[in-house]
Structure formats: structure tokens, C-alpha cells
Length: 495
DNA sequence: CGTGTTTGACCTGCGC
DNA sequence: GCGCAGGTCAAACACG
Ligand SMILES: [Zn+2]
Image 1 (cartoon, rainbow, N blue to C red):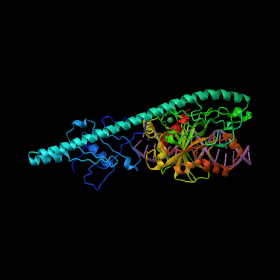
Image 2: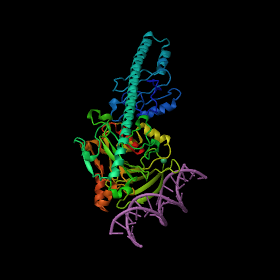
Image 3: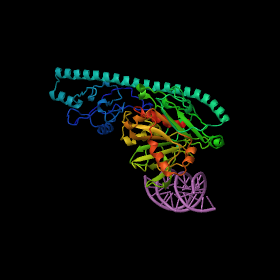
Image 4: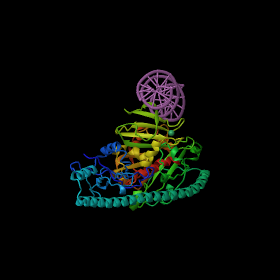
């Protein structure tokens, strides 16, 4: 079969460093049975490219969407040189989504035809020219479409940046306000905050100390994303500064002990409008973050995976393994080995109830920039999402039926994932289908001080197990832009 | 030889 | 103080 060439569809490919997911105008739907469909499979395409690298200078994947969504998939491969002046042959195949399925004879075969005939007929030339013209027209159209999509991407990015900046500003204002309030409250003695589930559809109460104004926020210290224990997200527009409120959750007697040891972070809903949920954050969630004196942050990720080590772009060195009590599965301890002295650690353990679920818990902040690989991963789908997507079989589509739930446990349970102490854990749960989550929307929970819980349920394993079971309690939903919010939650630890 | 894994020993916090 | 369990250390080992 004659060698194929591909036409450039866009001489201005989207920068791979684009912080948004590199949409891949992926692969045509293949029709193997159609002899006219000469475009090879993606794999073959790559092979072909390797073989003819001098001809096919560049292949660009613009958008990558759900593999199951073939109708929306367009795959464009392109020469980097100016195709408009390329007299050589062309195969352009656009899939059914565009209604295009254009194919012209191979150059060589054309040439041979001409040679065979000696003198080419004018009609033949005209036919070819017509086809070229048609192709050119389609090319132009496709280029226009590419530009339009790229503009949309840029616009999205811009909007996101703007929103983030606004969010940061509001958070900062809140922070100042809350700090002063907090000082006063500490002066007067702390008040215990009971565990409570708040329904956002109910009117807010003063008692909850939650600010339900979507535009409101709290604020905490911000840290470089590169320091995040989780793989950082380097998306320029994704420096999601979330909200933090430092609470005095204890009685005066325990105050000294607890102060500086625990910070409770509350994240306020940005947008509760269902119509804008594609870019909306979870309605709300709260996060206990053990930090302060310990300087630790912790995020637990639940994802279905056959392998224990979910590829998160990080470089980890195993330093220990233990058989957790009551669990047939060993728990592994890893330390970041990207930089000497990096305090970031992670634990990997399979869930007792469902051994297909891998629970990975990250702790601490990196003291170094992340590896290019980790950054790249973060740029593409965000590292968090990348980890989370493991279980959903390779789809990068933000429209996957999987949602993540985010919750936090006031302390780690030995049943599910046991990390020392009573430090709370932020849990990203990507093991449940979204339809199981939807009913819990608009809910979040304020949990009481971990210390209080721990002391109130002393060594009661059943309760602990129960706690783990309810770890699935859904605090938010990610109907569309789950990657965005995975990044957001990953960056919680930056504050 | 550098890096990562394995694994028994050791440390620490907590409950009794 | 003792025992238990989680977490960490570090020597031995494996591997490229
Ligand atoms: Zn690190």
C-alpha cells in the first residue's frame, strides 16, 4: 500500500505546556473494512511517523476526549511545513463527526498513472485540481475550527485565572477578618464545635460558623505548589487558594495543647448554581489539616487499581512495610526520593473491604520542585486526577461517569488507612460512580476536633470501622470538571 | 556503584 | 510499668 501523507491542519499547534488538558483531536474512528480508509490505526500511525519522520514532521494531538465518545473525536495529523504549497499527496481523513471522509489517490500512484498514460489528460488534471481545492477548503475549515477551539481553551484559562484571582482576594480579606475574630475568641476561651452535617439548601446558622456566601472565603497561608506532598499542579491558572479557618475547637484547658497543632480548614462553595456546575467546585467541603507544629499535610486518595503504586509522577523510596492489624494486606511506607531530606511520605494500602481499592496517603510538603514528569502529569490532567483516573480505565474525559468525593476523616483508622496519631486526612475518593454521589450533594460536614473524637471513642474498633465505612460519605460531586477540582483539592495543602 | 527493596529491630504513643 | 500497634531505621540484598 502506498505510503500515506498527512496534511497539516494547523500550523500553530497548541503548546504542550498549555495548562489545560491537552485536548487531543484524537484519532479518527477507524473503519477497517473500508478499503478507502487508508489511515492507519493510531499505533500504526506512530510507526509510520517514525518511518517517515523526514516527511511527517509533526503530528499534533489537539484534544483528547473520552475514548467512548467517538463521535466527538477528531484526529488531525499535520505536517509542520506549509501544506498549502504541498503538491504532494494527501490523505485526509476526518471522521464521521465532521462528516468528512476525504481521500485522494496517493501521489505515487497518481504519478504512475500519468507516466503510464504518457501525457496526462486535462480532465484528469482537472479532477485532481478539484479534489485539491475541495481538500483545501476542508483544510481551511478545519483550521478555523482548530483556532476556534484553541480560543475557547484560552478563554477558559483566562476565566479560570480571573476566578482564581478573585477567589484569592476574597480569601485574603476573609483571612484578615477571621484572624481578628479568632484572636478575640481565643481570648474569651474556645468553644467546642460539634460535628454537624450542613445542608446547603437550608439556611445557614450562626452556630456553624460557616459562611455560606458563595463569594466568601477564608484564608490560610499559601505554599508553593511544588512543595505539596501530592504532586503539584503547575497549571498557571490552578493555584487554587482555598479557604482556611483556624478554629479554637477546644476548651480552654486543652487550648494550649491543641493550638498550633491543628488547623481546621473550611472551604466555602464558590458557586452553587447548578447551571454552572461544569466549572463549579464542589458545593463545599471542610478539611481538617494537621499542620502547625507538625508542619504536615495529608491527603488520602482512594482509587481502584491493580497495582499498588499508583503512578503519580513522584519518585518514592520504600522504607518500610507492615502488616496492619486486622488486614491481610501489608501497608507500605514510601518516602520522596526526589530530593534528599524531602519530608514527603506516602503510605499505600489496600482497602480491607474492597481490595481492589488502593488507598494512598500523602503527607508533608516537598522541599523541592517536582520532577518534569510529575509536572507534566499535573499539567495534563492534574496529578490527582491522574491517580484517581487509574480506576476508570484511562479516560481523561472530564465527563467520565466517575465522580470523586472528598471528605476528611478526623483521624486515620487502622481499618482503612492508618496513619499515626489523630491527624485528619483529606480523602479523595474516586471509587464511586457519580450517581451514587448525587444524592449527597450540597452537604458537607463539620467534624469535631479529632482529639475529641479520639477521646470520646476510646479504642472502640467497631466505631473506627464505622468511621471508615462512612468515609464514603460524599461531600461533593464532580459532575464535569473533576480534574480541575482534584487539582484544587491537591492544592489545599499548599495553604 | 548508585539506587531501590526487604525485613527484623527499634522507637514511640496510647490504653490498661 | 507493660503490652500492643503503628511508624521508622538501617543492614543486607537485588538490580541495572
Ligand atoms: Zn519531595
